[in-house]
Image (cartoon, rainbow, N blue to C red; front, side, top):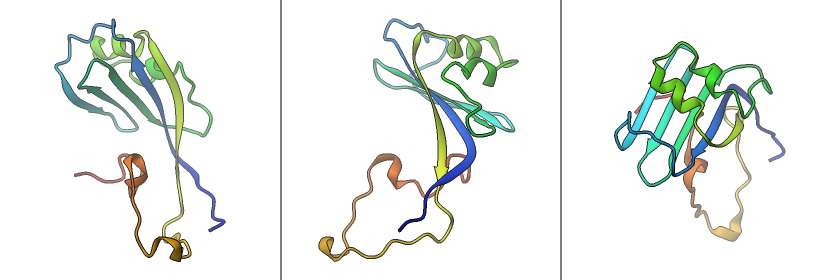
Amino acid sequence: TDVRPRYSGVSFVDTVLSSDTRVSDFPRGTLMALGPDHCMVLGHLTAQTHLYFGRACPEGSLSDSSAADIVKGWAPPFGALATAKGQAVARKIEVLPPGTRWARDTTWKGRVALIGDAAHLMSPFAGEG
């Protein structure tokens, strides 16, 4: 298809904390903290800690250093995570229009494998469960 994705209205700051960053305020596991138009997701499962700070915002308005703004006014442990040392990258969430279809490629005889985020049917927070 020649249909191109469009900006969904949501962007994230995706952060991987360095292994020496203290996150002891939070137990191992996954934590989601949701606000009306912003969120934080903590994946603290292995030696690396992954953080995702999301916000509904105009395209291009979120930068690699926007995490602290997203959780401004939240409890201090969240602010500490937002300013922790790590590698941060701002990412916009894009979507294809509903009903977009691709022409069938007979090379694969109808088989397809969706891996990781490619398997999502909708952008984050569009559904639950």
